[in-house]
Length: 170
Image (cartoon, rainbow, N blue to C red):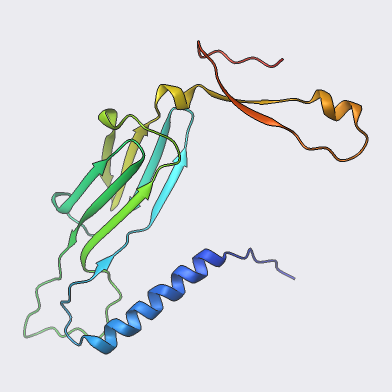
């Protein structure tokens, strides 16, 4: 028997998109309608940076606006509808056209003056350097209590800043 991981938020998001499409189809019959779509993202934590990947296939780099704050990133722009001609008729399209907007809250502060961007093969990658305070954050675990207890114990974690950037176990 194959086990599947239950992801309720992904299913709710998919259901929301399907309901939105149904109402869009009911209320608007034209192809070019003013809708916003949300590009897919990945947020990756590395020791010194956060990496934000945004899927923007087919979008011209000149149609992308990026705003970076210390605790959030706002990406917006437009993927224009293609020109229709008399010789080609659209029968079906699942492409996301029109304006897009995505606001991403960051889990830790970043140095927004030092952000770099790369746009290749429809993927926008933002390198968001962590602030010095976020890089020096150390989690200290007290393992001494576990040796004395035969029953199940929990670890107490305390977050500390290391003044000179060197961390050592005690």
